[in-house]
Every structure is written in C-alpha cells, then in structure tokens.
Image (cartoon, rainbow, N blue to C red; front, side, top):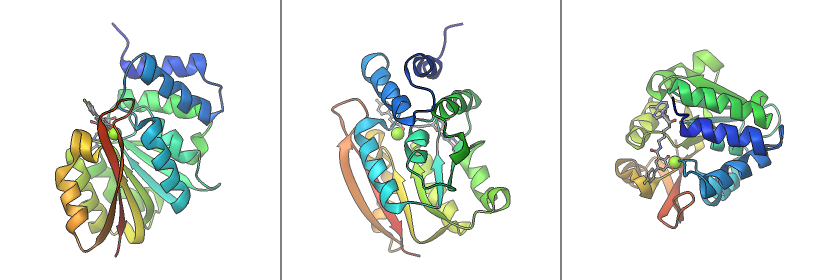
Amino acid sequence: TRSTRPQRLLRAVQKKAIKGDPQSVISTIDYFCRHSEWAMNVGDEKGVILDSVVCEVSPSTALELGTYCGYSTVRIARLLPPGTKLITLEFNPDYAAVARQIIEYSGLQDKICLVEGASGDLIPKMQELFGIKTFDFVFLDHWKDRYLPDIKLLEECQLLRKGSILLADNVICPGTPDYLEYVRNSPRYESKYFKSHLEYTKVEDGLEKSVFLG
Ligand SMILES: Cc1ncnc2c1ncn2[C@@H]1O[C@H](/C=C/CNC(=O)c2cc(-c3ccc(F)cc3)cc(O)c2O)[C@@H](O)[C@H]1O
Ligand SMILES: [Mg+2]
C-alpha cells in the first residue's frame, strides 16, 4: 500500500538530515513541506515565535498536545535547559511511530517523553505518571475543538500555576474561536496574539500566548 505523508516526511529526514543535529532535522522538514508536500507542522515562520516564547519561559516542565510528526517537539526540546523534559501527547499510533523515529534521529530522545493516548485521559494522570506538579509551558497544536476543554482540564487538575504560559497554534486558521473567546475574556488569563501565517503559505494565522494568573 502507498506510504503515508508522515512516512514520506520521515524518509526525507533519514535521507537528507544530519543524524543528531536537531536544526538539520527542522530545516529538512521545512524544505520538504515547502517543496514536496505540505504538512501541518507549525513551520518555520511560526516556529521562530515558538522558539522565542520557549527561550523566554525556559520551562522546567513543558507539555505539548498533539505530537503529529514531532516537528514542534524537536523545536521545543532543542531549546530546553539540561535536565528538563518535554512531555508530548499523541493518540494516533502511526503518527507516534513516525514521531519517535524523527525524535530519535534528532538525538533529543533524552529530553522528550512521548506518551501515546488522548489528552483528555492523560492530563489527569500527569501527577501520578510523571510526578509533575504544574507545567511552566503548554503548547497546544492538536484537534482545535480540544483546546478549550483541555485547558479547563489543566485548571481542574491544578496543573497550571500563577505564570504558566499557554501557547496555542492555529487560532486563526483553522481557528479555535471558543478557546480564543475564553482566554481573551477570562479574568484568569492575560492573552496576546502573535500574527503570522499558516505554515508554508501566505494565509494569515497566528499564535495566542496566554499567561495563567492563578
Ligand atoms: C485529543 C488528542 N489527544 C492526543 N492527540 C491528539 C488529540 N487530538 C489530536 N491529536 C493528534 O494531534 C495531531 C492533530 C493536529 C490537528 N491539527 C490541525 O488540524 C491543523 C490543521 C491545519 C490546517 C490549516 C489549513 C488547512 F487548509 C488545512 C489544515 C494547520 C495546522 O497547523 C494544524 O495543527 C495529530 O497528530 C492527532 O493525532
Ligand atoms: Mg498547528
């Protein structure tokens, strides 16, 4: 049977990227998505904004919702201080399998913990599975109708603390209207929009950065 797009993306990484070099893995994926096949990675333009927020927060504990092929997983993990871990959640086993290989190729496997399962099931288990008290940083990039229920779940599970940073992809395209309305109007968040473009295109999109006020 025909290979899947994530498998073709993985093959491009294994063929063209330098093993153990996260930047070359990132550049190879961006080149592949720009010149061969578009894929729903956060991409290079929004990726620079993601990088700047990760560097500013310099999180000790970080969570990513929706690994897909691991592009943003590698982007985030390459900037984390030594000894910190990025937990990334992915419920599609085929995507998880590709992501594991891309993460391993980048050499960042020691900074990343990929957990297979649905965010709604796993978020309540973060304390028992990983001894996590709160997350300093959360990157949301999974199904767009899960952003709002999942941050409400993070609040309920007391996994956010005063100053925790949420960064959400695709708040314009495909769009996350209920999430945006919530974080922009809730007194418990201070929110800011970073205007950009949908990965590898000229279509408007952007990232919403929200600080949990406790
Ligand atoms: C509750 C739960 N738990 C665990 N894993 C979960 C999960 N819900 C989803 N996942 C996982 O996360 C990824 C899903 C990502 C969804 N992203 C998008 O749909 C997306 C789409 C576009 C896009 C824009 C314009 C177009 F014309 C077409 C597509 C751009 C993007 O950047 C996107 O992120 C995928 O790997 C899925 O298995
Ligand atoms: Mg996205």
